[in-house]
Length: 111
View (cartoon, rainbow, N blue to C red):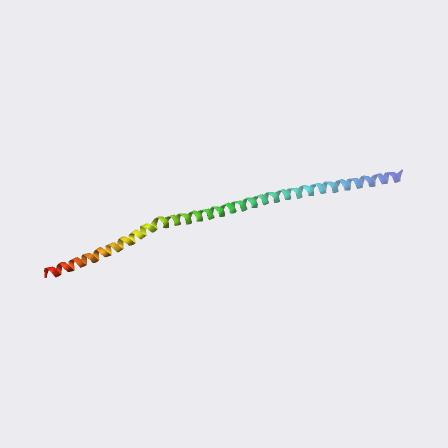
């Protein structure tokens, strides 16, 4: 009987030790799951930051492309005006030359 009692006590102690080990494992698993969830949230945060950076880069590229298009349109619009200004300047030179020539002739005729 004493032997049975000792075996029962040992089985009970093993049961208590296994129960404690089980609870420790359960707590460790909860901690690990919490860490995993935190890592998932951090990954989501970094993924969102990467998406934002990608969108900002796309916007900057689009802004640069729009600026390039605007410059090209300005060149397209201003080029004829600049050509016209050049032509007008040439015409003014011709008229001044003609005026000088006319003055010279008038001075020759008056003398």
